[in-house]
Length: 377
Ligand SMILES: Cc1cc2nc3c(=O)[nH]c(=O)nc-3n(C[C@H](O)[C@H](O)[C@H](O)COP(=O)(O)OP(=O)(O)OC[C@H]3O[C@@H](n4cnc5c(N)ncnc54)[C@H](O)[C@@H]3O)c2cc1C
Image (cartoon, rainbow, N blue to C red; front, top):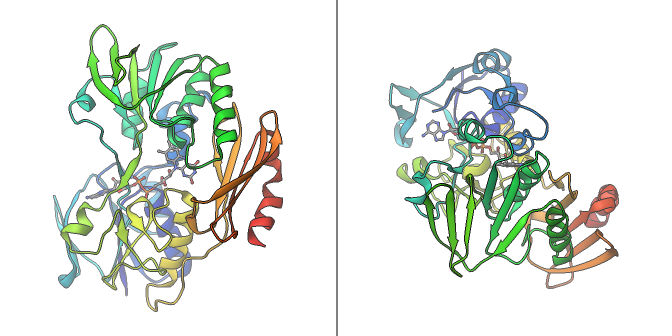
């Protein structure tokens, strides 16, 4: 019987386990994770405050329930320390495990801006449920929060905090939120909407210091000091390639895979935030679903490529709804925008005039299906 070993119990690990079980009733599956292995949906971390959910409410199934559901063995709180591809084995802090096929689903790690600042109590990165528990435990009613970073994650937390009566400062190196993801008109309209809920927006050339005094003080390169009770670092993520690199798997920014989600070692696959497919790095669940589907069908014979189905990304920003969609993860091109007030449709074209993406905002988000058809055309 083929034995599949999955490292990681995030959405990538579990969606892959689900797909493998559905396509291969006869394989045995083990999962190893350094956390508790309980199932939760990470995207809900940035919406649960205004939905009055506690961190533990996000756990929909325990590791034990997941193990039963997909008939697999889960080794929780066990850290993989090395992979030995030539022996088809992994070593953990507790044991050695054999595999026929290995799936790396080790996620991403937060991009660090300064090691020292990040040890200050009240300054947090949120990558996993445990980080979120700590953040929520510290966050008292109506406290002020400074978010550093204005990308998707920063914008979603800003929405959640503002809707929950917190005062929010957002420090950004870029001229408007969601820069690089939406056209300027939508970014500026997002900013207007957030500021109408009292967001304090600070554009800066950089953060020069963070110190904990009576409050947490963030100083910018222009010598402006912003005080708040908490600081949330939303400075992005980088794929976790540590194990893969130590096993000499080919890595660029992420663990490199071909269009079949396979690494340069034929028995090892990579999926989720740790992986870099021919489409590049995609920190989205739609990318996980497509890779997981392919992996489940490629365990014996490698012939199912990652599907190229278009899947829109919904920014969870109730204050100003935005949906974006890109063909093969291409985001660099020229936007053509129409609309008025704060309801926009942006169409993205590459250098040769090919359609490569769209962004919709406000009332125009209802046009999603029409724009998918346009992009597919
Ligand atoms: C706030 C927020 C909102 C988001 N919203 C959306 C959204 O609306 N839509 C969307 O598509 N995407 C969204 N995303 C992105 C999406 O959540 C991620 O792409 C996805 O959750 C990544 O899952 P993963 O399993 O690859 O990584 P992770 O969830 O990070 O899981 C990694 C796993 O690997 C384990 N691990 C790592 N190293 C080891 C080791 N050495 N030994 C054992 N175990 C190990 C960890 O313990 C963990 O179980 C959001 C992300 C964030 C942070």
